[in-house]
Structures are given as C-alpha cells and as structure tokens.
Length: 193
Length: 185
Image (cartoon, rainbow over all chains, first blue to last red; front, side, top):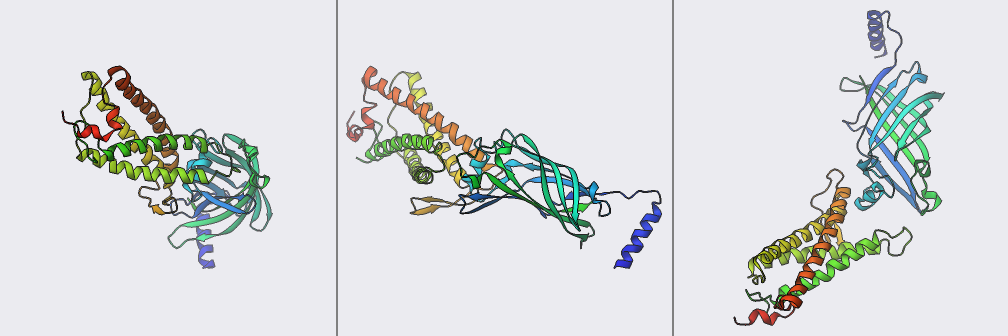
C-alpha cells in the first residue's frame, strides 16, 4: 500500500517537476453529513443543553508538510439551530438572543494556525455571530485522513472553544453566570478537491 | 332548543360562541403575559402549558363549530344590504382567523415533531413538522393573526351593540336566548 502510494506520488511529482509544495483544498463533507457544528451550554448549572446548527458549508486548506499555512472558512445558517425543543429553538432564534432574522449567518474565517504538537494546534480566526466579529482561538486536532473507500481523499478535524455570549452582545444577564458562556464543538471531514 | 333556525341560534351554537369568546380573550391575554415572563418566574413553564392545552381544546371545539355551522340553518342577517354583506365577510374572517391563530400555534410547538400534551390528559400528535424555520415563521403568523382576530372581534362586538342600542333589533338577543330560534314568524 505504502509502496503503491509512493509510486503514485513520485509519478505525479515527476509529471509536475516545477510544482511547488502546495496546500490542498478541501470542501467540508456536508452532503454526506460527516460534519457537525454543535454547542453546549449549561442549564442552571444542573446539566447541559446540547444543540447543533444543521445547515452550514465550508472549505479548508491543509498541507501536512506546512500546517502553519492551513486555513478554514465556515458559513453557518443560524436559523438551522436545533436543540430538540421547538419552542426553545424559536426563543433562542428570537430577538432575545440570536436574532436570526436580522443576523441570518454566522461565519468563521481563520487568520492563523500554530502547531502545538503532532496533529494538534491552535487555530485563530474571526468569528461573526449576532452581527459581532471577534477574534477567537480554537484548539484543533487532526483526527485522521487518507483515501476513502469511494475514490476520494479525506482529512478530518475537530475543534473546541469556549465563548462568552456577552462578547457577541447577547444579553444573558437574567441567567446565572454558568449560562453566560458556551462551548462550541466542530468536527468535520473535508474531501480533497 | 339545541338547534338553529333561520330566526335564531340554538343553545349549542350559543354555548360554543360564548365559550370561544372567553377562551380567545383569555388566550390572548395569557399569551401576551407569558411571553414576557423571565426565566426564574414560577409561571415560566406553567403558563405556556395552560396556553397550549387551552388552545388545543379550542381548536377541537372550533372544528366542531365549523361543522355545526355548515350543517345547521343560519339565522338571517338584519340591517341594510351593505351591513348584511359586511356581516357575512366579517364572520367569515373571524372563522378564518380563529383557525389560522390556532393552527399556527399548534405548528410552533410541534415544529420538531413532538406532540402537545393537553392538560397531561392526552397528547395531540405532531403532523406537519420539520419545515425550514417552522417554529419562528409559525410564531410570526400566530402573533399577527392573534392581533387581527382581537381587532376584528372588537368590531364584531361593536356591531352587536349597534344592533342592540341603535337598531333595537334582536340580533344580540338571539345570541343569548335560544328561545328566539323557536319563535314563530
């Protein structure tokens, strides 16, 4: 297998003798639904509410030889939020919180990546939510990658970050302090283009 | 006694009319109040439970009411020709808005496919669910149609008082007293 790959790689590189080592572009596999954008927020400090944004799209660029040049962009349809409770979802999307009719899209655009170890790193980027853009950092891990059984090539990552809702002008002052922040968890596979 | 005639309403229609009137005003007030409750209010979960349960019962009663109205004689309108036309359109609008308010409310709570518990007595199952942004859109429809229903109901009440005070006919009386329907012409 390794031999075969090496031969393939060598023959491709011999065809492109002048090509520089370039980061490959990937599209997040939303169609096959190997991608999730989830949030986790405390409920009164007693347990957690879990939910996800079901509709989003994105792409990234990744080169294992030059991870520092990695980048990722994700656009999220805010009104696709689902926490398995229609009335709560409606309330979260209302003007009281996310105001999805005024701010229908949340975006993340990376600005930098710093490796912290084998397959690990810190991603920096601009997160826009509720019309407010902040620079955030996210701990990311390269989970795995390689040829898939259907003739494509995939790489998968996950990332976690904790964010304060007040930073996005979302008023949680009537809720206990533990509910004023949330965890964002993103996991996806990209298909190399 | 129970049935309508072309002269007046039977007891069944009269009871449904006034029960609906009380329920509609009560639900509107409750809905307005409960949507401003804060998270720590003791009524935060209980008020919507009453609102949903009452709403679902009213939806059932309204379905029955519409069927009854279609298969029973309708008392003749009174007043000038224009007033009769206005009354017909007004009543049709009230029925339509009532159904829109009730169904849109049902579509909010069932948007994710869960049914609505009616007084913990039975569960009204979800039918239409999972439409894109269903709860929020149904919520907008619910809010505006509820307002429209309140305004047109006020017009309905004013028109009834006009019959009572200015025209001095029995239009208002026949929605109170079922004996009017049995009077001979």
